Image 1: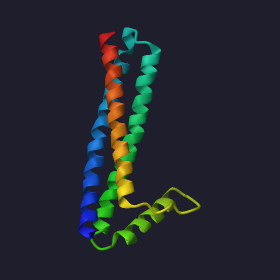
Image 2 (image 1 turned 180 degrees about the horizontal axis):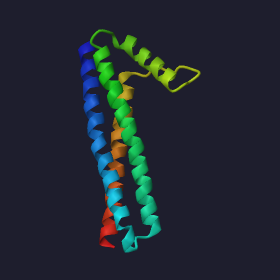
Image 3 (image 1 turned 90 degrees about the horizontal axis):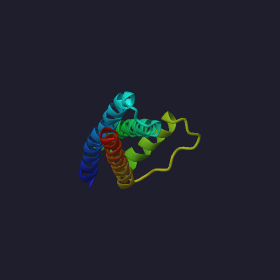
Length: 139
């Protein structure tokens, strides 16, 4: 069981690392749209592109945080049981985020499900930004 949980954490590290690529594309595509601003792009298109880039930046930061946390969790799970390591992680997050009440302890499967939602969000942002770029180029 402990080995399964450790491997799940390692897979989550890979998911988080892979999710950064769509974020990078969304930010690069935004730069390409902004570079076309001199060609009379509508301000709404530029604003949408910049908002998508800012959202992609936030998602990239969240994915990097999750990648680091899951990597450390996988190391912790080599010597500790999951019901020992996860509450410690939540307590550390509570301290780092300056929360008065410690956050509730979540199961590893819930954490990975949340990570998958962030990766999906990154992919959707990249797709939307690609559509904005396509409209800017074909306009």
